[in-house]
Amino acid sequence: MSTTGTGPGPVPATPPGPAVPPAPGTPPRPVAGPTGRERAAAALRAEGTPEAEWARWDGWRAVADAPRIDGPVVVVAAHPDDEVLGVGGTLARLTAAGTEVHVVTVTDGEASHPGSRRVPPDALARLRAAELAAALDDLGVDRHRRTRLGVPDTRVDAYENEVAARLADVLRTSGAQLCLAPWTGDLHADHEAAGRAARTAARVTGTALWFYPVWTWHWAEPGDPRVPWDAVRRLSLTAAEQTRKAAAVSRFRTQIAPLADDPDDPTVILPPAELLHHHRAFEVILL
Image (cartoon, rainbow, N blue to C red; front, side, top):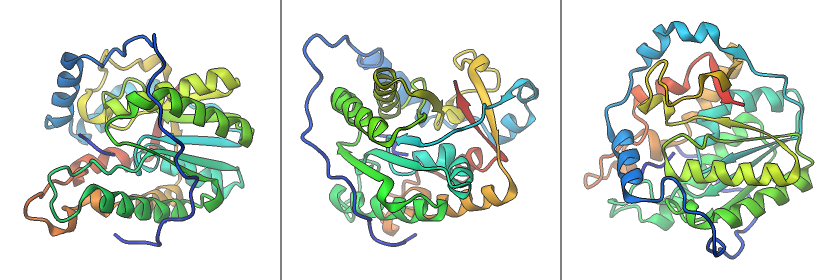
């Protein structure tokens, strides 16, 4: 999860293909203008809604359970950690049941700490790839079913067509019955672009698509009209699944602690209060 632990090294991954800009005539994105981006950035920088408010919300009683998941399943993430924060417990359940799970990470998250002088972007990309490898090991995702696209962090919208094409290839070759992707209304530009690319890929391949929110719990409020609550469904987690997810989340040291104890950049992307949103006894998807 980028807003602008150590484990095994990165596993072999599909190398990124040549990046191409959007095709001529592509309609402008709703968030492409400076006003949309500024408002989204302000919402993500704001203090955020405490998890205690979400826990007290009576509206959860009206949220139905998600349908049964049949595999193979392809999970799309804009950055290393999005898939674990959003649906890590569900991944643990699927792999434990023997369901084939593929994970596609669009960027390496190298722009999460642009002010760091001790850990430049290329080094940060390697660290985050290693963190993700360890987290997916914790969740039981086969190392041969992981793909990194290497799209520049913070610029997914500029490569959206290529990402959609790559995702369509994965959906076809895996025989996926379901694609899980970041919600197109999450207010993070990379998340929304990855979600749009997944929507395009799912449409052309005839694959079912569910979205998962990540930053929504930060900027939204219980009952927020910007969230389509009629599309929200719950994925309940067992205690064992919650434990496996927590172990996987703890791998992302670059995001949950100051980066390399760098006094020039004490930023913690996911402080404890933010992580509480992702340690619930259930996960949320949007149909």
